[in-house]
Amino acid sequence: MADVERSPRLQDVADSAGVSLATASRALAGRDGVSLGLAQRVRDVAASLGYVPNAHARALAGAAQPMVGLIVHDVADPYFAEIAKGVLRVADEHGLMVLINQSERRPEIELARVRSLRAHRVASIVMAGSGYVDAAEEAEAAAELRAFRDAGGRVATVGRHHVPVDAVLPDNYAGGRTAARHLLQLGHRSIAVVAGPELLSTVADRLAGVLDELRDAGVPRADVVIEHDAFSRDGGVAATKRLLARAERPTAILALTDVMAMGALSVLREAGRSVPVEMSVMGFDDVTVAADLAPALTTVRLPMADMGAMALQLTLRPPAARPRRRRTGHELVIRDSTAPAH
Image (cartoon, rainbow, N blue to C red; front, top):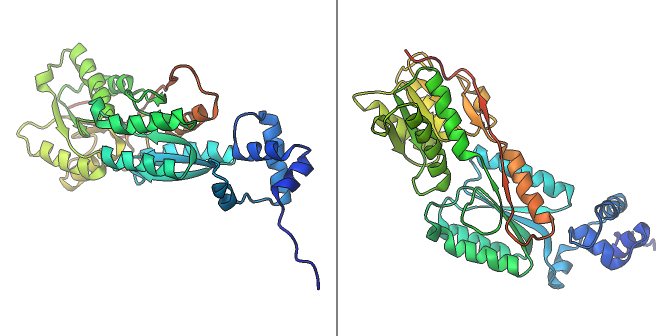
């Protein structure tokens, strides 16, 4: 009877790469203690042999899995899809699997997701999405992340001010000033802001930048109409409908996220309002579909995929004595949805 072909084992990888079994295991798991060059050689050998790690055996051994936990607010939001793309790119480069969860912008669900990822023994956690203006809203999740880090896990966030871990901070305040400045330079003085929930720090930061720029240009705060709603297309629809119901309508709408701007465009189109002839519309983020809208959306671009990549890269570096902060830039992208005010 012919012998059944045996699947490659970790020992086969170690022997072929000329390293010890422990070194091969650390290299394939992405753990510290193995140089980048050696780790890449072990991964190349494993790929050439067709070696597949036995995740079940590793779980039984009680070791942390070569997995990353990613928590985002909303997996359907293009903003988080771009951040996830950056995380996945870096994870693939290091042979890591990514478990993606969403928190629905609810602190209690966020806490449950962190605890679930800890139970799955992930090696690191990236939490992407706005923090909260009131630090108490995320205190329990922050404590859980600190406990995970103190137990040897690695943590990084995107867009969080209050959590004392490594973080990537988007250029929200400066981007808000840039957005308002663009509309002011086009001659707009009656500018309405369509914004997400007030409790989110991303909304507070972007709105602060907008209001400071308008104030410096001599536009009284009382003249700025702000409509808060869900950070979504439907939220943009509801907020814009309220704006159009006002007796005095703005000449420009500044949405603090592109998906809300999409909702605004749909309402104006249904109402027969020409954009940008009758009303300019501007967004924030520059998600992938922004250039394909009709009209193409003027917006503030953030390097979303790079933000996700930077966050995961922080978890792959040796721990620092103090939390590291990586701040992004931003870019004004002028397209067809804004024009001089009439």
